[in-house]
Length: 589
Image 1: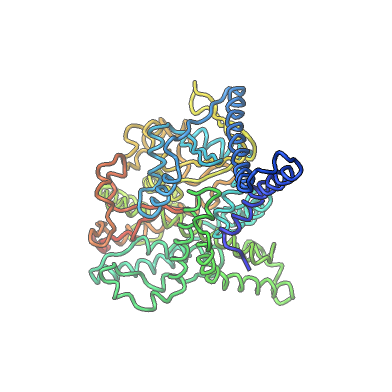
Image 2: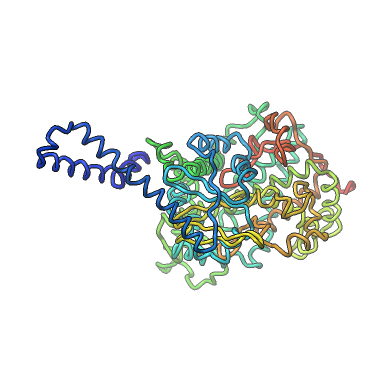
């Protein structure tokens, strides 16, 4: 029987905290029994002394560590990041609440305005460093890659959902996953657009049917199903058919959703996947103490069981095929270029836990990130009809009014690639990430004339891609304006070319996203097909969840949002992105 997280936490705490107190109690009791002048010491005083002995030991140790860090930093010519004075258990709870109702990264952004682009959070005996500096991010992801890892804290927080998959592993396990997945993201494989074609046609059909009925379309749901079906077919050779369940009606007409929509396995999977990610990210706000908020029940494991139930048929099929090969019933000498990624994984391990973990991790990458990119793309199209028109003109010129795009077409559509990059800049699918220092290290100076930043060992470092990519000092005074031309005109050479790490939507270095070009191709294909067949995108005000009224009084993009963006592991729109549009006839194009 598996113990609840809170019980496990207290068992570990007993070993680290209470057990030494017990030893102190025994020692004081023995002293009192052998020394006559201690005979009259009350038992409660001995117990109290034993209990407070640990905080009296830990507190000075924490203070000493801070003082020592200051001395080491000074000796290295480095500085300690400023400490956020407002950080407390109440702020942590507020930060957790923003995951469901606030603006992504809002609390941390307000700290940035006061403390600068690098600062640290302290609570109890834990330190977290937060940075928005491209030089720091470059060091974490690339130049000092070996000094950082996901770390034990991250493993514990994400383990219930991601297990030991590629996104939640280091060392040899990470190298194993990486080596297995790399061969399946060659140009030849990611340029096979037949998978996109089949699933996009179903998506187009759903959209046409819904607008013919006079109802809005939830593009977030539509593209999530498109990316899920495409990902499972590309990676595992088995399309799960989530598009076959149909797409939902708006809440005001939810009664029109057939029972088959709710009963489809993919519907339960999508809900579990979203809740699992949200609950996992909530743990990050509480650091090592997250089990206290899930004391009697791991809130993520029930969601993971639903996800596993969804993925297990794929796994069983791959294992059966592997068994047939090894028993002589299949062609084991078949060129591995022809097998799926899952079949390739099964050739190297039959451990069901490793395989299931990898399935979940790859589905996060294959479904959620590109789904987030497409959702934000359509949101921007509703706000910029001039950009919609210009994109369609490029599509018609390069691809034609009805043809499917080829790899060569995609290379020539410069403005469409710039459009996607601008979406990735302002609404990166993974808005923030974290690494932990393996040993004490320094982050390089953020700019000439500044000092390096000292970070002790085993300290999580959170880097916010979204906030860095919105900085006006890095991208120019118009950084908060949505303008794809910045990736084409002189601003490209003024800002990005000299400092490429100001744009990191796919991470960088050894752990750079292997599916980067896959995501570009998939998103481009989908946008081309929809721009060929639909026009005049607009938000449906009645169906969309509106942002809180007080956002209008805030600064930056938050004040301009027409929908309510949120983020767990990836960004998404609260309540869906409900869009109206018109079918575009060939004569109109």
